[in-house]
Length: 201
Image (cartoon, rainbow, N blue to C red):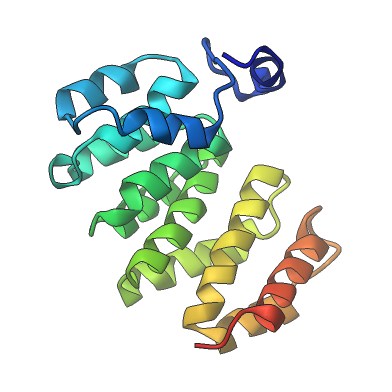
């Protein structure tokens, strides 16, 4: 346990949090054989380290869409959303379907997770054009969100979107109304900088 780190992570909302680094959690997970039963047990806890390990230890082939959506609704902070997305959800073919479901409601954390997952999934394997278009259209609206967790996740998605459809992404960035939302200027700068310095394909 890292007491200082644990204290600094209290804002994440876990009931139990040992402050263990992500690198160390990944190292510890290699000691165990992947197991659906073990992962399910770990996920049910409200302990930061156990939830993250669950995303590392669940076998990919048995992680179906129903469970993925259920787990997605339990992601209550940005760190868990990112680990859930990167470690397992983005690797499944139905990832973009989960994203679209998350965007149907108005829950801000769901929208934040949706863009994190969309960016990770599209990087893993380009998501289908229909779902990509739905996600992009939602991003056009969520650029103006008042929530930092949402608009910062939109920026992450738009960076990935620029590697797939540079023209459409650039047009969106250029037409942002900078006076309409607290993160608009930041998003424009973030995505423009990424486009400028991103390595060419």
